[in-house]
Image (cartoon, rainbow, N blue to C red; front, side):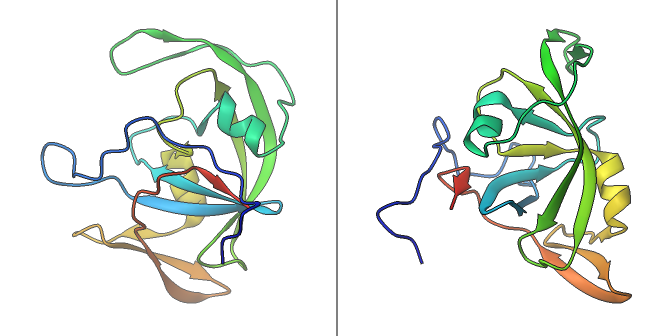
Amino acid sequence: MFDDQLELIFCPDVNRKPLEGGVPPFYISLSIHDKILHNVILDSRASYNLIPKSVMEKLNIDITRPYKDLFSFDSSQVQCLGLIKDFCVTLAQYPAKSILMDIVVADIPPKYGMLLSRSWRAKLQGSLQLYMSYETIFAFGQPKKLYRETLMKYMVSS
């Protein structure tokens, strides 16, 4: 499946252990144009969909308009480079399921492929199962299981 021409972005210090508290992040992969974006975190607490600048560049997508700066949980200001407005992504596990979204771009370390917000989850129209191994979503009126993926060493693959 992978060849010598595969282009990757590596995460700094990938740690495959669960976070303190025992629940690992819910990772999924998204298809974007002709690439797969890995290590996308589904975070029901996040207010914005956020992508690191280096990951955006690797995907060959561009900022479409300016955007305001954000504040992180510790109240520190995060400088935003802009917004990618009305961007369509497809679930790698279910290519028939596409979602239109806005993505905030920040010059932050690429510790994940993208952070998906609670509004993204609402558009997905799914429900996360109590033990967090999968999310139940609907594609063409049929319930489907969107399984949690494992953390990958790289963010983008072709």
